[in-house]
Length: 277
Ligand code: FAD
Image 1 (tube, rainbow, N blue to C red):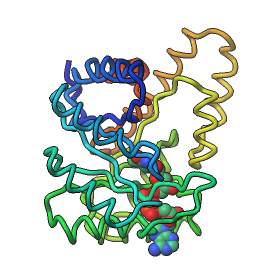
Image 2 (image 1 turned 90 degrees about the vertical axis):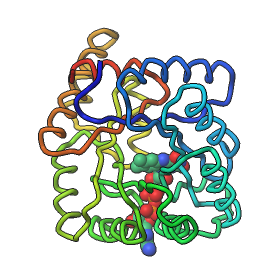
Image 3 (image 1 turned 120 degrees about the vertical axis):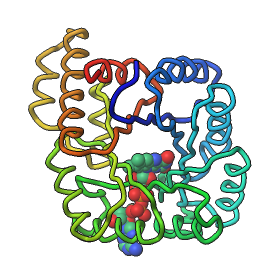
Image 4 (image 1 turned 45 degrees about the horizontal axis):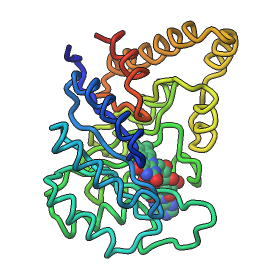
């Protein structure tokens, strides 16, 4: 059952046997949609330092999918980043997602590189065109940006440093995405800008995430969710309809593909994909 629009899926690296088994089950089910790649997040400051490569390797060797690592530069030294890149090359990776990351609270060390653009430049300087480099983009503006225009200019700096593609922070307002793409094109940015899609499963968790990363949950979605109360089936159906509608509008408006934040669960993403097929 292959979806017409290309898709990719994002996971976090499991740390326990139970989490590993859950990831294996999710990957097995999501593989049926023939994703372009499955990416694995990286904890800034070393919290998942050893788990991201291990998970990428597992995706590639056990599941036979294109496992793609995220690399963050905050808190890390140039040497640490260099050895990670070497390791990923040895694992057969030819694509990475390059990010600044966020310094965990209480961690003072800022690292050798300050911004994702410097990480992209390092990758290009040391590995030429070997890696397809994806970077992050923010249709609703990164929360620490000076303003929306500065954020867009900073996005251009990453592209000028050599990024080949961008994946956006999740959003539920298509106007924010289309306007962002128009503004980027007007600045001469011509790389694909793939919308990041967050299926809705645990709404209170989503609200917390969204406050931290600056994603807006439209009031009408919150109100409808609240109205379902304890009706778990109703919530599930509404959430999937809502996100599938968002995906349809994005694809109809020219989005090149869809990148799903799975949070290692297959079901919420599959519920959306089933409505798109
Ligand atoms: P940058 O592009 O460096 O931008 C960060 C901020 O600095 C922005 O406000 C920008 O406007 C500003 N800025 C950039 N350059 C300059 C400059 N020269 N002067 C002044 N200001 C500047 N986090 C993780 O820890 N691990 C992950 O695996 C991970 N994966 C992600 C995947 C995706 C698709 C996305 C969208 C986000 C992900 N994140 C991850 C979160 C990300 O690390 C945070 O959003 C982080 O705060 C910013 O990262 P960035 O790469 O966008 O940073």
